[in-house]
Length: 114
Length: 112
Image (cartoon, rainbow over all chains, first blue to last red; front, side, top):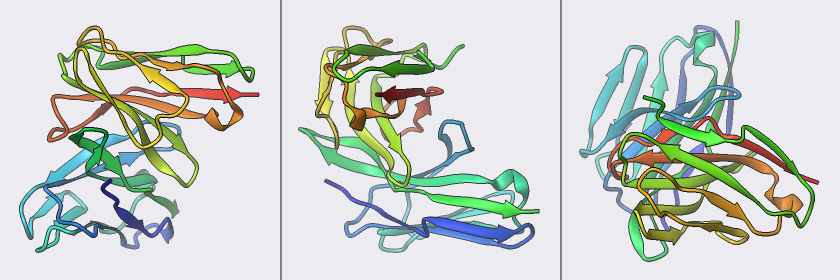
């Protein structure tokens, strides 16, 4: 099935520093989704990228989809303590007899020191 | 509008016991899925369903059964609980995987 590698696994930053997490696939992706999970919570959808080279921004968060649609990144500018959590990418995988189920990367756990 | 509702929130089982984790959604979503989350392993897909009467296996289906008799409900059954099934279980739904997944609050299961 589809595999997606996400790095780094952990990131500790000082408040105000930037943060980036990356997702890489060996195959071309149809799209990629990003989720955030706060400690003790459930994953919450952030954004979906579909087009080659697409860049989307949400306030201090910038999402990019690679030109070859095999990688993606999430960049947070000037982190705040509210950014703490685990960030996951998710891609369409292949299990059983059908395509179209979401496979998640292992996530990047972000901690922010005030 | 409740979204995705999972029950129970916490459960402790003894090895060999069986139980059903309940999941219901009120958004008329066709796609529903179950994930388990273990430290350092991300979210792993157990089973999924693309509509009532249709289910299929995900990455880690062994030891679990599902059924989808209605659009709203997608219960996950543990047949004979094992300590390796200690985990946090999330149910999620969507119109399809081209759309955002909506997650329930999770069930924290401990098998002793």
